[in-house]
Image (cartoon, rainbow, N blue to C red; front, side, top):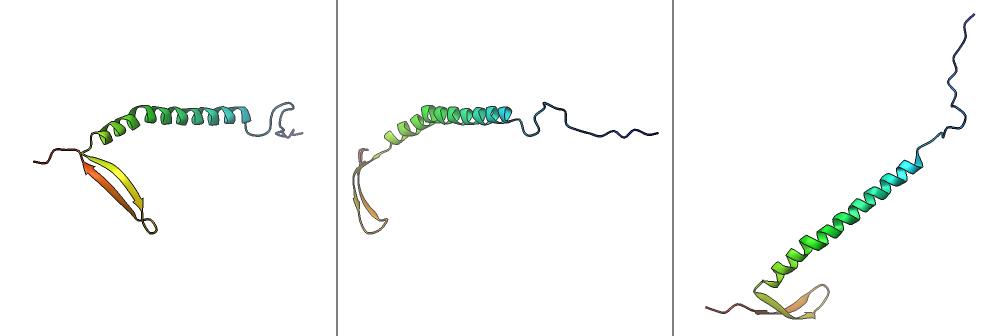
Length: 81
């Protein structure tokens, strides 16, 4: 006589994805993204603003024209040679 082995899920075990692990991974990923954005704003954005402040043109006024067109009045801050 032969005995057939039947694979049955054990009673008490979850039958699906582990939602706790999924939520922890999603939370850690979002936290890492927020941290990277904060670092970018703190270091890279400040350097870009500092370089923009050293440019030799200063925007005096922006006047809207038709559609997406603008008239920008600028002044050169360097001495003419």
